[in-house]
Image (tube, rainbow, N blue to C red; front, side, top):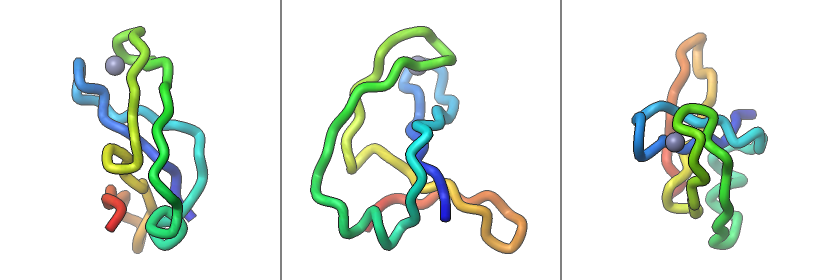
Length: 68
Ligand SMILES: [Zn+2]
């Protein structure tokens, strides 16, 4: 299981959305979009399925993967 993160377009830092999923589940999820209050730059960022990354710990290494 991993968590969904997006990249802040202002600072380039990762923003944790607090949504737990894995890549297989994300692939099956229909298109979605949402808004998140960014903790890095203080702005609200819109994001959609094509923007999110799944952050998973694989063999002790954090990996970021896009939905297929
Ligand atoms: Zn931001």
